Length: 146
Image 1: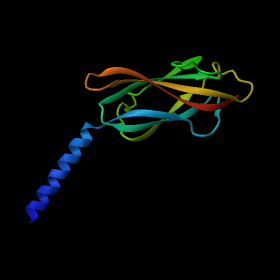
Image 2: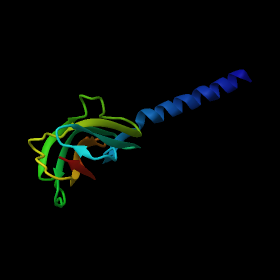
Image 3: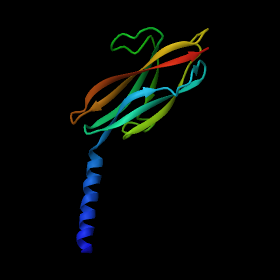
């Protein structure tokens, strides 16, 4: 009786761990912290992630800002910041989120009044068994004050 229960438990554990090892995650969105950002300071940007059954590794993010509409496929008129996901250990995160601090250089954002910007993140990834390069775009609105 004990042996059968132990065997069933062990087999179930192996199946769950094998499945978990096959699951990968990818970035699915970005957001600010809900407060105004201030030029000259860093602002927290949160990346949401979700498990996927397709092998996926996210490597870099280019962040672009624009106070006017962003053309389809664009990252904005101010693209000066990158996030190296490999160096911060976030290439494969599982479902959840992680946050990075993004500097808002006052020589780039020379504002005299509160301005709403679209922040676009271009995430570069390798996906699938063939490791096909993919760029995914995610956007959010953030108000930056002088």
